[in-house]
Length: 231
Image (tube, rainbow, N blue to C red; front, top):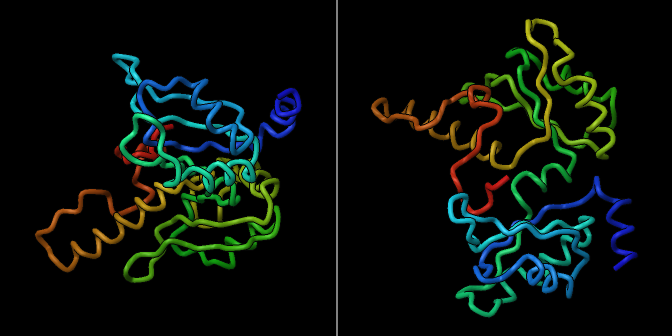
């Protein structure tokens, strides 16, 4: 394992967190680690425990040194391997937000409402090659003041994040842009809110359970537990 540990240090920044469900509650972190090591390199296992009782909640996080190793674990175990004492096969998926981070996808907030894709592209293209750019828009095609964009490499995304987040104001705006790694659940939340808002406009008495503006969600928003929302 010496070689594996050496690789862990070298690729720590590229490590990938997996969420694993259907883990028998009697299993220890060492036992889960040994099981996953049959299929992939694993750096660490963290059993998710009840805060009050400290008992296992039947799920854990598995940290792999690279996306390649994480994919090996997912392909070998997800819905394919049932552990002794479990009623269903293991659920092995990328933890919340991991896939977006690995795809070098950024969320940009506090954009002026009248900003165009070309203007956003011109600003962010200074730091690398943009593979995708999408400004979130409402039912009247009006900007919601936020966007998602993807870079070709992690280094490019990181350079843009560090240079622009909280430091750059676009013309027509009094506040600096917010730039952070995109989060899968926040993106889903934005779409759900947008859908609820459009339904509410059709049915005036229907109450939307979430704010209609994505930017109105607290930046530290944690969605209700859905099996993959632990951080």
